Image 1 (cartoon, rainbow, N blue to C red):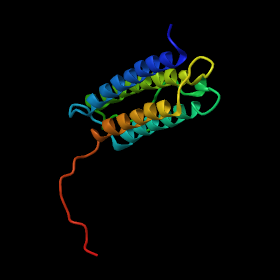
Image 2: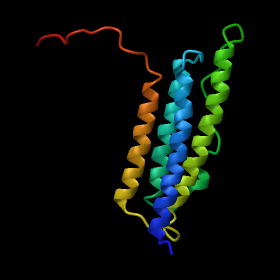
Image 3: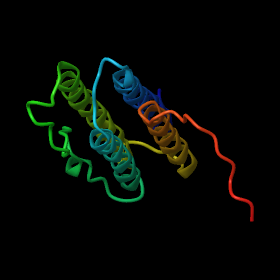
Image 4: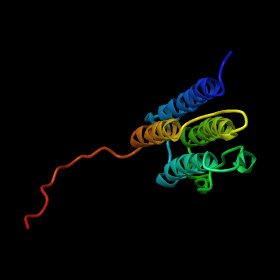
Length: 156
């Protein structure tokens, strides 16, 4: 029979894997055929990081995972109609749907914080959310502009 810790580990791996898969789908949106604004990228990754911090907090005390959002919508305004393109509209549509999937699996991850159903160590929780954070930085870096020039630091 599976112990409460084994069940926690199995479900945490499964749910974080699903978060990673959806983040990989978001990474695909960095392709040149999609158009996005800096504000939209900021909105996506601030939401991702905030979800991770909020979810980690649930492992420190009583579970309140139903208070987490269940969908994602951009707070950044859409471009005016004369400036939008198919690539931009498609980016917003796909990014909202994919980030909503991330939100839902993060909520499921938070449900693992219920001590009456699962046992886990502080180290396991830290490992889980360190990987979550690292994935966010990994995917976000794909949307950042590439360095084009090199300059020495000023001499002291």
